[in-house]
View: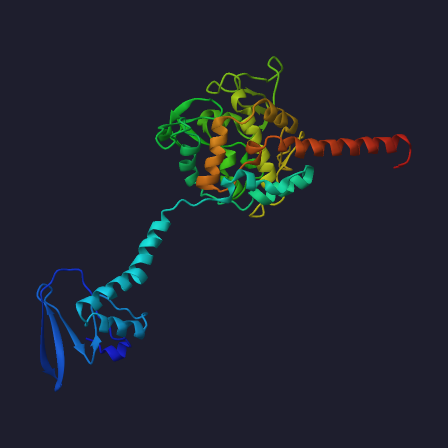
Length: 377
């Protein structure tokens, strides 16, 4: 047994909650009186030499000497004194620990849960100023791993919007079919569909795993969509197909370049890609390209479209109960940010219609300058 002075351990006393029969006797060790406390059941002895108690169970090296001396005297006093000491120890040592455990079970409330305060600083903004302000609000969200996206989708897109954890099935975005959660990632099942395609600028986290942009989709239908941008085609024209795939919903459309989801979720899709254009339209972590919406989509320039169709879908298909619940759960359970266009669909026209008007005015001014002969090439 090591010497207490060598360990620099202050005098302590050990309190055990195990039932025991303790006997005390004295004997001579090195010609000095030493008490030996003996417990019958563990067959171990604890030597107390020069008031130095060494316990094999506990070593309180961080407790102050003053408190330990007080404790030693406390438990060697009469019963009333010992009772008062126990109360003090409970109040100052045990009670705070219990309270800490109780407080750890309290639900955490995130800033995004207070919708009114979340958007309080953007009154009267529009155009570029509004998009930049929204970006500052929703950026920096908690990013999930690509693997954990599977688990999140099983909650966010469960068929039972009121009890998603108990629901055994999810709803596919393009087929509108209800399929078992257990078929996740299987060839005959569903996979993770990026509404804003990966080839249009999604390279790393957080854009690659952003839940506002990912939905469950039938594996076969997802393959048919590929990286086509969103738009509408007229049935009867060359290459325009309805439905877009034999497994897709009957009102889906596609041609060589565009893809139209079911009408019941066209607004959902529009608001998802508008979110992406705002969230990653100024900066994308990981040296990824900034994202834009345009009526002239370009995979090379990372411009997704078609903007005019997306704005149209946003107006014709307002947020549903399911879409609002999904937005709320992304905020509360996963990313701790919101899709502003689900909460305020009117922001879309304040941002992009304003930009389109500005672009149109610039074009008209440029045309007038050329007609007046004020600019010569």
